[in-house]
Length: 341
Image 1: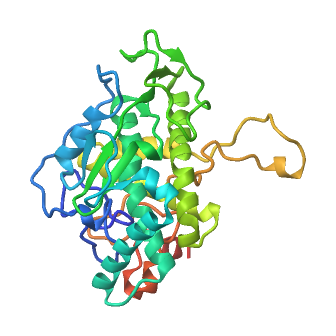
Image 2: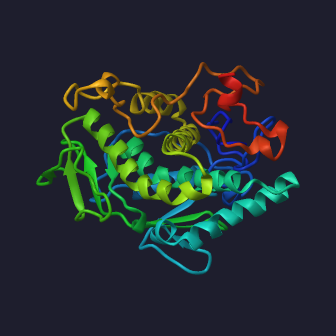
């Protein structure tokens, strides 16, 4: 099943198995594949956690329906197959090691080498897909947004494990953690260093969504900068690839949790193609203000649900993974080259 093109189902199925007409391997990465799961769907809620951190409860629920991806709240690790996020953005050799893993899998799957930029693009997708869930799932289930930097996480692709070091987070005024928390405008988020632990309140749902986009953008900016020489694409394409991975990860997880429709609705609102406020520089460039969701690609790309048995995706991707360059018939059903052609 392909995270690029497959419709989420309410029960976990064979994670990573490509479906008919799909291209790259599925949710998160084929290294996260554990075969069929008998876990039943867990109904999502928007109820708050009583904990003083964001994420642990949401990550446990994810593990119940997607045991191929295991998230532990712990300091970042290294060695024995672990890749620390700090190393990924600071050491080109560590990044190339991650990409080589996908190049080897591509050779085994398609019987021919992937172009280096294609292997790098797949590696980027398979990194962002699970890591973005560290942000989006607590927002979706707890209405809390962790404020993480690459140095807070580590992953081990071979076993499908992630570690995350919880710290500061955004929450709503009615969150149990909010009393006594210092108010923090949604735009004031961490860039290179984590903020002090604890809750930061934002006034409403719109501000929390803006905080989620900002937190994701702050985290992903150095990641995309590191991948750019390998993927050989410009910033707009890289952010389109990131948008696809963020949307598809929560959409898939929402389906496993029995909350597919709510996930679609909230993702569509999160990346709605609105425009920013009128304040700012004047002149020709000000005629088309940046979307509120910038630098992400505007619009979550959802379409009318596909009928049973159809290979058409319920979503048009913002980017192309280029896997068809290895096998023409492997083009994803949600590829923009198909759906927008």
